[in-house]
Image (tube, rainbow, N blue to C red; front, side, top):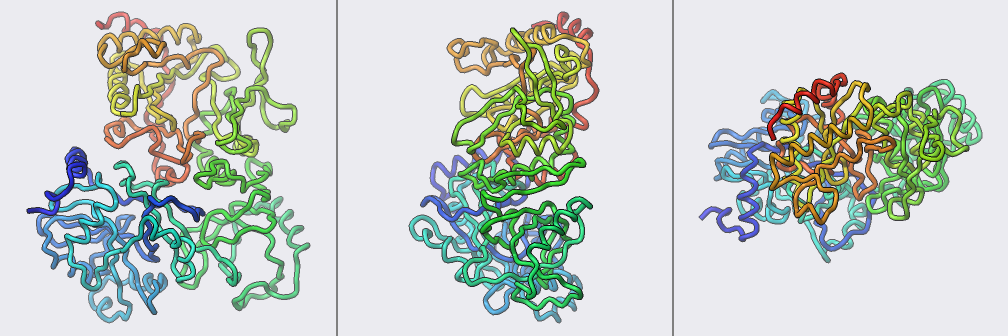
Length: 617
C-alpha cells in the first residue's frame, strides 16, 4: 500500500482537490517578523543560514537541484544528488536548504565558496562539506500533496525517505513544547526560527511571502556589541547630506563605539544614536553589506537593534525621506498600524515609495477620499474628504461642488504628496473615477464583484463571463484584486460620456449578464432578494463615488494590497482577493505591470451602446 493511501479521509479529500492543479509550484517564502509571542498552534523550525533548494525527480530519472532563483546546483552539490538518486522513490519534489557547517553552526561564507564550484575536480578537492536539510514535500509518487497541512506533509517526508548524510530531516516543535523556543533560540546561537501555521490554506504554497510563514531573526540583545557592516556612499542628495552632517557633528566622540577594529583613514567617530535604513542584496563572507544604498535616515530614542532586518525603530522615531524635491517627515514611524502583524507606519511608507511609479498614474489629478487610522486598524477609522488647513501648500487640492456647497478634496500628484498622506496614517487612498478638471466625465467604469459567501469560485467565474461579454462589445477591460473581498473589472473610457449615462450603460451590461446566468447572478441591491447569487455591483459609477486605487494597502489583517492582474491569472484556482499583501508583493514588483497591456487608451461608449442593444439576452 502506498503511503498516500494511508491518509485520513480529510487529507485524502484535500489530495483529490489538489490534483486539479497540475502546475509545479515554487517555494513559499516567509515574512520577516519581530513577534515573540505565539499561540499553541504554531509550528517552529530552526532557520538555516543556507541556500533554498528544490529537488525534483520524475519517472526514475536523475534528481535535479535548483535554487529558488532557478540556478542549477547539480554539479555544485553532487553528493546531495547521489543520495537522492539512491532513494526508493522514482518521482518526488522536495523543498529544503543546503548549508555548509563548521563547528556545529552554519557558515554562509563557506557555503558561498562552495557554491562557486562547478567542476567535479574542484568539488572533490574542496574541504567544505554540505548538508541538505529537507522540510517540505510537494509531490510524491506523481501526486501533488501541496494541499495537505504542514504536519501531514512533514510526516510523509520523514516516512518516505531514508535520511543518511548529507541528507537531514528538519525537526520541529509545536504547541506547549515550543513556547520557550522563540525566547531561547538566540541563546543557542541560531540564526532564528521559521514559524508555520499548520492549518495554512492551500494557496500559501506559492512563490510569494505569506503571514502564515514568519521568519524570526535573532536580534542583538544584552551583551551583544555593535560591529561594522561596511560603508554606504549612495542614496543621499545634497540637502540630506547637509542635514545629516549637522546631526553627526553633535554626536562626535573620540573613540570608536564598535567592537571590531575598523582600519579606515580619517574616521570621525560618533555615538550610535542614528538609524540608517539601507537597501542591499546580500551579506558578504566578511560580514559586510553588498551593495548598500541608503533609503532613509532617522533620529531615534532608545531604538532596538535588529541586525539584518528592514526596520529598527520605535514609535518615537521620526524619519525624513527625500523625494520629489521635498523632504517628507514620517512622524512616529515605528507606530504599528497593523498591531497583529507588526506592520508600522515606516513599513507603509516603504511600500508606497516602492510602488510609487505604478500607483501614481492612477492617482494624479483625481480627487481622493482618505481612509485613515491614526491609532492603527483596531482603533477607529476616519474617512476624510475635505483637505485640512494644516496640509502643506504643495499638496494639490480640487474644490468640487456637492449638494448645498463644495468640498476641497486632496489630490496626490507626486510621491512626496503620497508619503505625506502616509504620515497622516492614511492606509488606503480611494480615488474618484474621474479627474478634477472634468469631474462629471469618468475615464473608468468599474464592476465590483464580491462573493456571495465564503467560496471565491463564483467571483472568478463571473469575472470570466463579464470579460467575454465586454469582448462582444469590443471594450477592453482590466482585472484587479481589491485586497478586501473580491475583484474589480475596470473598463477605460475616453471621458466623453457623463456619469449618469456611464452608470446606465453599466447597469444594462449587468442586467444582460444576469439574464444570461439567472441561477448565479443578480442585480438586486437588497440582500434578501439575492438568494445566494452574486451581486453585480455597479454603484461606484457615480459622481462623488470612489474606488480603491491599484496597489493601495487595505486596512485588514495582513495588510492585503489591491493588485492588478493579467486575465490569464484568473485561472489560478488559489486566487483570492487577498493573495498579495504588503509583505508578499516584492516578487510581483519585479515583473512587468500587467495593466500596461490590459489597460489601453479609453474607449467611447457610443459604439458599445449600439452593440449592446443588438445582443440577445
